[in-house]
Each structure stands twice: as structure tokens, then as C-alpha cells.
Length: 289
Length: 259
Image (cartoon, rainbow over all chains, first blue to last red; front, top):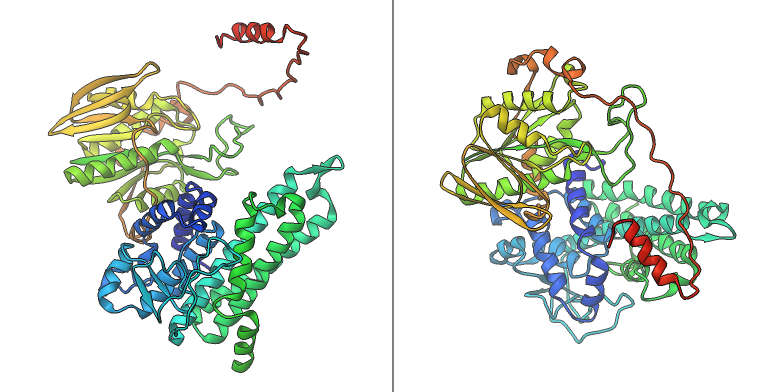
């Protein structure tokens, strides 16, 4: 249960696109409510087929597997792409009336869903209820419009799985940033990465991320609520550890909002508790055992 | 319109690259091998020509077994099929030998337009397009930053240091492109999935009617006699500015012919 050669190629293609897209600037603009650069990226993602993955072929989609979606969402998380990605790409295809599906697939329509109604101000299609007023989020790129609303069980599970994949990618990016910083930051006459205490912390993050990934892929494969919940807990824990460690390794600069680490850091903090808190998912695993 | 794009697999220019100590060839086994960057622009240009004028796009690669990864990657961008010239006797072939093999392969396909990158990031010779055009007896439109097609007439803007030259020729022709010509697309999900089903024809030297003596080490007219690492950078000269710093800076720049 590891990604196929084609899935790895797709991830590599997404990585190339996103690495060239300057996603940190885009995320900052998105958080200020300035959407043009983010929407331009959305159209590029649509060209690569990302928005069509979960749409059946009968409605102009790609009818891709849950594993294909997981691979894509890991990469979207890896680059901290802003916007209602989970909502529009993974969840809405399961809720939207069929006539909306072709335009969701082509990327012309962006959807959002209950109960946070992420980016409801730019969404063309709102599912599961009616959005409320704009509310603050620890991740400033997440523009929430919370209100009551309901999702079906399969739609919720699709959101949880995509969110877990995003967390896995976010954690990996945080580890990469920390490793590169530890190699270049010289203190006491040597790169701080040569200090054993730093090495140990980074190794623990790598282990956590590597041990979460099989759960993520297993959940994509089985699709059961128990596996999906286990993946969300493991990916959330690993990404959170990666975020906390990144903050420690970076020292003072890690705390500054202007430094790009803050974008990944705050997104992890937000995503750990949405699409079900860790406690709720542990309870779901417990109930299924 | 029948278009062939020449694609070479090269070691990633973003990483450290080495020559092998035993035979002075590029070390490809330890490197991360990728499509020569400039060739991606040639593929993109071919796909745009196809979208505008129809026809088919074929990738042509000469290289070892692992070059098939780059062929797949190229196909995932959208071309219809590929030809892989694969033969153990090709190891050590120089540019002249490569042009002999590729010309033989091109004669089989008989394309209207041959597109390629203006240079490879490993050898950087820029000679292959001209050699191919000479061998095939067709026009060479090289170093293009823009290509337009009207009927069988090809027009390029050839990029030069001062500006550009407009060069025209009738098909068939070889067109080499710089990275200023377009923005290559990223392989899409559909393209990647379709690539594994696209036909890749593997040809040996015998298939092409080229004898092993004409290529490889025996056929090479040029060779690398020896190589050494670039010397480490020496420390720069420090000038303490006591009112004369600006003058010394200008003198330095003048000596180095920067101004």
C-alpha cells in the first residue's frame, strides 16, 4: 500500500508546479482576502486534474481512487496551499447535485461545506447549510464562516482523510525546513544540526511522520471509519510534533510571523482540530475495536 | 504535421555533477537523471504546434535503459509515442556519432519538423541540430525564441546577444529552441495515466542500419583526454576604503572587462 509510480509522478508534477508558484505569498494574500493569485493557482491545479479527481468519469471527472486524492493532498499540504481544498475537491463531489459536478471537475466552480464554510465568500456552491459571519482562525489563511450544518458520513470521512493527508504533507515540509535551517544556522562555531540534541529531535519527527504514512495509505485503501480516524490522529500528532520541533529548531526567528514557517505552523495547529478533534477520532477508533 | 522532439536524459543540473574517473564520461549512475531542461521547451512547442495544426508528436531518445524514465516523463506531457534508440555499442558516442544515429532514426520517421533544445545541460555543445540538418539535407533553424508555422513555411526569431534575427525555411527542418520560447506545461493526472499506455518503439543500431564501428568509443572522433575538479575559489581581495575605494573598484571592473 504505497503510491504507484504514476502516483509518485503526479505528486512530482504537483510539487514542481507548487514550488514555482510562491505559495507563501499567495497564502498571505489569501488571508487578507485578496484572492486573485490563489484563484489563478486553482485554475492551474484544475489543468493538472486535481479538481476532477473525486468526480466520476460520467460527470467529466477522473474517477480517481482515494489513494490518488491522498497523494494530491499530501502535496497540497506540503506547500501550504490556501483555499477550500478539502471542502471543494474531496468533500463536495460527494454532496453536490449532479449538474454541478462537471464544473467542479473543471475548476470553474469552487465549493465549500458545513460547518466551517471555509472561504464561503468566494465559493460558488455552499453545501450542508448556510454560512455565518467571518470568524478568526489561528491560521489566518483559513477564512471561516461558521454556522450550523450537517454532512453525510461518507462526506465527512472524505474530508477527514484529505485533511489527514494535508497534515502529513505539512509535517514533511516543516521537517524539511527544520533540517535545512539546522544545516545552515551556525552557532558556537558549528551548524546547529551537528548538535546531538537537535539531531534527536529531528529524527523523532521523521519517525513520527514515517509511521503515520502507512496508516494514511491504509485508510485510503480500506476507506473504513476506523482506519480514517486512526490516520487523522497519527498524521495530526506527527505534524504537530513537526511543528513544535520546527519552532524549537528555528529559535527566535521561528516565532516571527513574517518568516514563512508561521504559515505551515499555524495551518497544522488549525487542521489538527478540524474534521474531528483527536479525542473524537480516538473515540471512533475505540468504538470500532 | 509530423513532429519529432529530441529528448536527452541528463544528470540534474541542480545537483553536483561529475565525470567518471575511469573513462572521463558523465557519471550518470550516481546522478538524479532528468529530461534535459531545454528539451521540455521543445516538447511544449511541439504540443502547441500539434494543437494548432494537428498531426502527431513523437519523442526520439538515444540513451541507456534508464532513459526510458525520461521518455515516460516526456510522454506524460502529451506526445503520442516515442522511439528509444538503445544499444550497448552506443556507450562513448560523441556528437558526430549521435547525429549519425539520430539522423538514421529520423529518416525512418520522416517528420516535417524536428524540434530540440538548443543545448543540453551536460555537454552544452549546441552542435547537434546543425549536424542533423546537414546529414538529412534539410534546413537548420536554430536558437529560436519564437516559432510560427504557415503552411509549410517555418519562421523563427533566432535569439542573439544583441536581439534577434528572423529566419525562415520550408519544411522539413530542424528547429532548436531556447527557454525563452514558452512555458512548459506540467504533466497532468490524465497525461501521466495515459503515458504508460503510449507506444515506445525500441530500436537497435542494426534496426537503423548503423554499424557499431561508426559509433561508441571506436567511432568517436572526439574524446575527453583528462579532467580535473575546478579549483576551489580563492579568497577575494579586500580593499579598506580610505577615500580611494571607488577608484579601485572601477579599476578592478575595468581589468575584468566588466566596464
